[in-house]
Length: 66
Image 1 (cartoon, rainbow, N blue to C red):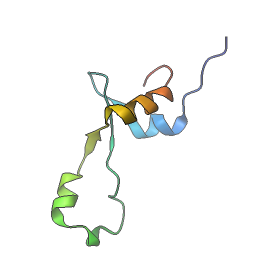
Image 2: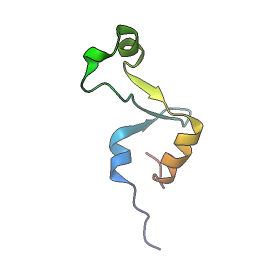
Image 3: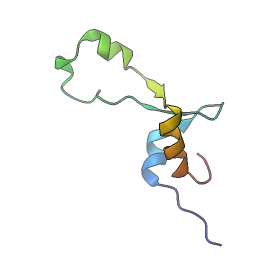
Image 4: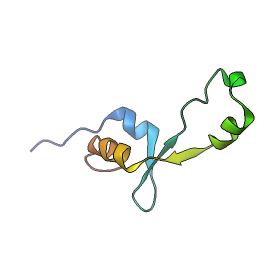
């Protein structure tokens, strides 16, 4: 059997936590930040853990994990 391919965009954008959850960078932080208030910018700093529903779809694109 041939090996399954991993979506190359997924391996660049997501990391696994030690407990097996997926974490990703937060959207909405690249440009036009002047229209967002300080609370929005502070709360979206760093990375967030993906929801279970989203993580299930993303893990289907990672047949052998990260």
